[in-house]
Length: 450
Image 1: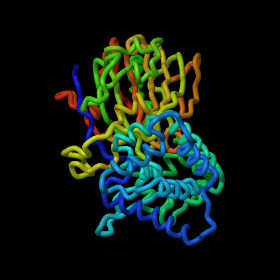
Image 2: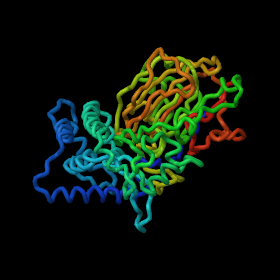
Image 3: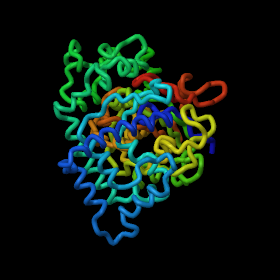
Image 4: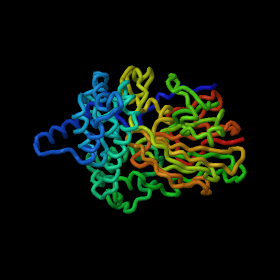
């Protein structure tokens, strides 16, 4: 089986990309915690209290969740500064009470290190890179409790109060460094000319909630569906379903495979939630995977014209990762062996573990055949919302759904009879090498069927 090694990717603004950034962000959280402790009347928020009760509840399942938490503290790398469950709860109290800010931690010299988008993941990051964390974060009871906590926070992110970080001050999403990040991959366009802004003259662009800002729609002329102006050629063109960065392409996908191998091979049976109705259509086919950064557009568009055969959301894990030995040689951000961010490094494995949306599209073009779009949540960015249902007819470029508060990765599956030539900016036509870390605009040409 032809295999492209898992990419040494950049972290897309979801997690701190250096040790100093981790420490800086953690210090911000601990400073807020210290301020809370001065007030002796503080209590846990109702959502955090419910989460704590679920974790510490009596259970016949051994080891108990609280015991696995305690084991993960003991097993975590020395860099971990969250030493007990009580501190986890206090950190969660801080996070769920406010909208995400555009946090830019600084290194030891005071230089900005890049944005951080997911505060929950910082809390659980090093704990997930342990054997106990692997067992805990895959446990259904843990994920049920975490889902309730995240749903409570998601509800808050749809309220007017959540717009308080949509400012141009430090930590605001329209501050100078934030706009630079939001506009980095927009080419000659700026934020207002790329996205639909209810009131572009206002600092917050008129968004009524943080969630409305995050799920913002693009201007039609900013991201047109690729066209060669030749209908015959265009029928063979598959477009990018997401604004995203190339991670991996794999061929000859097997029905069953082992994710524990260093290469993190894909298993169709697990990716497609053990649904034999559709898995057979993709055995021996091709998988394309790319990840979404914190500044990217977070809606999904149909890569082809056709009919929706099925559309489902599969519940999964939030913080489960494959424990590893840390960053590999050549990692663009971390020194070799750095234990941070295993969740980002195991994105192929997350296609069968994390909460994900599965959308099956029978293309109008028999050269393309069945296509499956998989929207893969990661950490707290696991809310997948569908905009289509079985039986819908979709045109190339039609909306399929979206991530709420982010989204980490997406996959396109193609059957074995789809003979695809990927665009030159994705795969080098001479060497066949995948151009990892290339940013791809949504609705731009991805591949051509022949």
